[in-house]
Image (cartoon, rainbow, N blue to C red):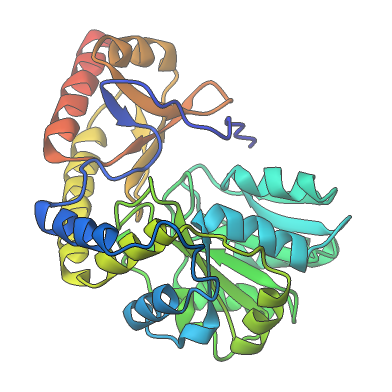
Length: 343
């Protein structure tokens, strides 16, 4: 199954449900912290290149040491950097199909090849078969998103560990852009045991800072020290780092938002699963993945309402961001019209 998608999401519409962004801006309390952080920023000076303040702030949230973290311009930059360092030129990168389209982009930029293992329609897969095929292909790097983008399927921590063990020292990157929305545990808990493991995270999704482009790579200290040696200077601007630190200082506010999105996701899934004109799958991310044989008709209805969703190149699949209660309600009204007119 091949799901081709453009790398840049559409950015114009009344209700934007195509890029898995937060449906609401920062709260007034969060914004006050941001304003204070900006007020104290030295715009005339270059950014603090060691990222100490930001790395310490994020380390305290995820429970690792700051020297295990590198921060970058979104997790995308770090994914590209890791792919280049770990797979190298002419390497073989192994992932799921479907998975995050940027893996293809960064792999091709280094002249490497990407090999994909086809998942079931709901994103699940036979891990033994996945491991066996990847070893047969002599994979230099294994990378996958968990929860998966676009399916929302999430491997358990035991399944992630099985993958790591199955590749016997081959580097494994677990892209956890959506892990805050999942019920499964993070692979960060496995870092001490497996030097070949790297985890990437972002503040673009659960933290609502897509406009700031702040992401992280986490691994064992000796690995991150080695990666720091060749890392681009000034990867993040001072305002981005200061704003990120301000938001990270109140994890409780972010957790409230996460809980609301998970509740909205469950409500939407319950309603959408009753519809006969489309099929949707359980998700542990902030989006819902599905398919319909009448996608053109669906898109026509959504376009009338100014609702933008993510479409994939096979002609039937789609992905919808779980947004605010108001925007979700408008989406469901459009879907119910789609269902009613299809009867």
